[in-house]
Image 1 (cartoon, rainbow, N blue to C red):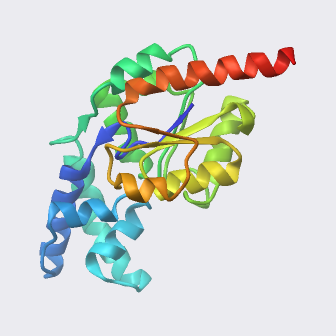
Image 2 (image 1 turned 60 degrees about the vertical axis):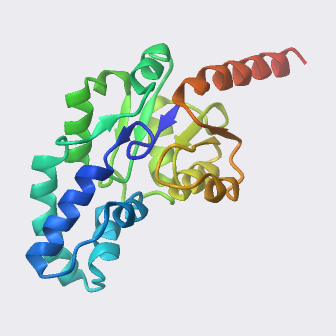
Image 3 (image 1 turned 90 degrees about the horizontal axis):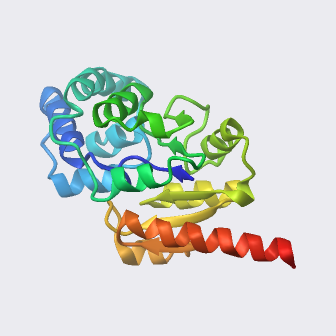
Length: 220
């Protein structure tokens, strides 16, 4: 089981929005609404800042990152919360091989996991700098599968956005879209995921059905 972080296990949008607007203020750029920032989340820090600032040059983006990175690291747990059912779901599947696959920088990822006490559930944590390429490239998913010593056909990628769906599909996993994150149900349906859920608790019945189907296939 491969989980995205932002918009899937945690609602980090309030703290990301605050850090983005702090960065914009320091750069003399008008602020963004929380809703606007939410649409920028999912493709990593550089892309988040590119969308928020309108910068395109590496030098300008590096300047923005110098402001954003330390500020967000300090404040990434001010208002971030676990989604309903996240802790219960991870505890339920604690005997399964689970990995976290996120485009978020590793330092912020590890801080959030530690603060919520959920690091113990993941045998692999793949962050934004863990592989040369980020989601939607399949490389982070393939690294997680390698860490878990799992076949793609035995795995499911759970996430809230196009980057998760595309990375999982390219890697050969099944994909499950969560509808409570940062993308609309309509946008997610167009991606044709294998499964769509409105609450993490629904994963229990999905995994049970996959397991039963696998057992039946082996019998046949």
